[in-house]
Length: 305
Image 1 (spheres, rainbow, N blue to C red):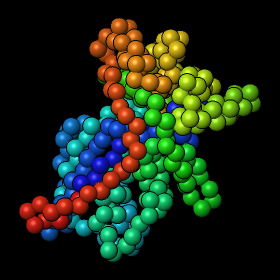
Image 2: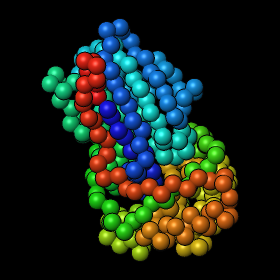
Image 3: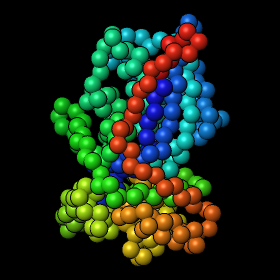
Image 4: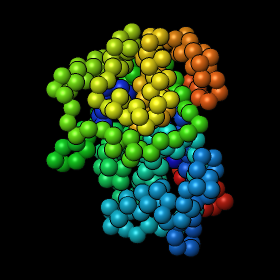
């Protein structure tokens, strides 16, 4: 079985660079079959909507990884148990990609050994950028960047006082639409502002949670994308005005609050419940520290992960 956490990218000022793994998991069970092709059964989020054949993103990720080592993808039965919302800014596509890459790596054990760094490259090739796939693979807080040789990532441990809270609305937003609203050029002062806040955010998340409100200030992307998700923008402003470190999670429309302790997290949940009723679902999630995991086992004499 493969287990992959949800992720929240950007975290306010760390646009396309910072990411956090959250203890909300999609699970994938893989069974080898004698018949060629890939057959997918989906339960939970995406059932009836996502493809159930070789065009499924998990299946494509498995095939991509097998091609990397010069081997054909075997016949497989996949059972995808999905919890991460689709189109919510919580890394559902990254989780699917990492699930496939990790599953393929597990199937290839003893034939071709793939390191986490290689899996980061393969996942980024499919996702297009490493800010979500990095925390999905490594867990914790990650700093991702690209070089001429490919994507890189550094994992950091999050201060135990940091208490994440996610607000998930009953609607989604296209990531492509959100990204289309981002300008190609930003003011110099705004770039410098975000550089300072990004550096401060790393310190706040790893050492000084009391600085999270200031550290999550952003001028590069959230306001530009506000027109695509006005309810999200309004709620982020309300939370921040009341002293909570709220940011748009990834491309939205979900909201991430980085509370400095559990009591502050509970207060933020109460504020949103009183303001927005049941249109936003509050999820109190811990920081995932392990990242994606693979647990091989046998069921009915058929090889599974």
